[in-house]
Image (cartoon, rainbow, N blue to C red; front, top):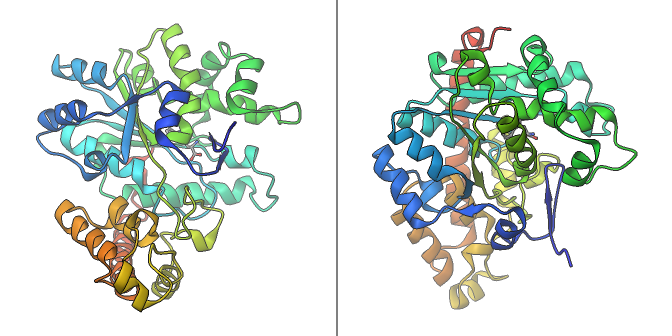
Length: 373
Ligand code: TRP
C-alpha cells in the first residue's frame, strides 16, 4: 500500500522519510558523516545538524576525494514557474555554504523548458518562463554567490553547450526506463521524456568543459532523486564520475502540507510577497496549539505540527539553543500563537527586504554569472 508518493512531478500524502530512504535506496547522513563534514569544513550548518539535509549517495567517496586533494564542484537547479518561494532556497543555501567552506565552483541549471513541457497551464508560455528564469538567477545570485566561482545556465539560451551533452545522455536512457522512473504514460509528450537528459548534464558539465574528470556534489530536494538515479548510471557509462547527492526534506507549508508547493499561494511565502501579505499568510498558518488560549496555557501544543515552529527550524532560527526555547515555549504553552506569528512575520519580512535590496544591487550585473555558450 502506498500511503505517500514522491516523484519530481508530484508529492502526495504524509512523507515518511525513513521509508523513503529504503524505497530510494539512499543512505542516511548519520552522526559520523555529519562529524566528518564538520571536521573538513571547519564549521557546521544547521541544515545538516537538524537533519534537514538527511540522506545522500556517495558522500563518503566525495569526501575521500576531497581529502586526497581532488576538489568537487556543486550542481543544483530550479525549474522556473513564477516567483521563487522560501522553500526553494534550501538547496541554494547549502550550495552557497559548500562554496564558502570547500571552495567549490557552483553550476546552477535554470531549465526554462521543464515546466513548459510538464505543466498543462496554458499561461506558462516559454516567453513568460524565460522571464522568470532570469529573475530566479538574480534571486539566487543575491544569496551571495561568488561570480568568479558560479555559473548559471538557462536551457533555451545555452542550448549550444547543453544539447551536445544531453544527446550523449539520452542515447543511454530507454523509453521504458523513463516511463518507469517518472510514472509517465503513453499520453506524456516526448519533450517531457527527453527532459531528464538535460537535467543530467550538470552532473558532468564542468568535467566536459574543463576536459578532465571533476567530482560533483548535487544538493537537492529528495523529490529530484529519480533524475539522478538515471543520470548516475549514464555519467559513468560515458566516462565521468557518478555525481554524489545530498537530499533535503521538504520544507512544510504554512497550512501544514508536507511540501511547500509553489502552486498554492496561501501555503507558501514568495520572495516577492509584500510585508502585508507575509503578515497575513503567517497569521493564517496552522499551529500545533490548542483551540483557545486557556487550553493552550493548560495543555501546551505540538511544535512538530506547528508550521510556525517548523519555519524557525528550517530557516529562520540558526541557533539550536534558541530554537529549543521556541519549541519548549510552544510545548508548555508559555508562548501563544499570536506572539510566535508576529515574531516570525517580522523575521521573514526583514529577510525579504534585505534580499530584495541585494537583488536590486545586482540587477544589470548578471552577465558575470552566466555561462557563455
Ligand atoms: N527539476 C528541478 C525543479 O523542478 C530543477 C533542477 C534542474 C534541479 N537541475 C537540477 C534540481 C539539479 C536539483 C538538482 O525545480
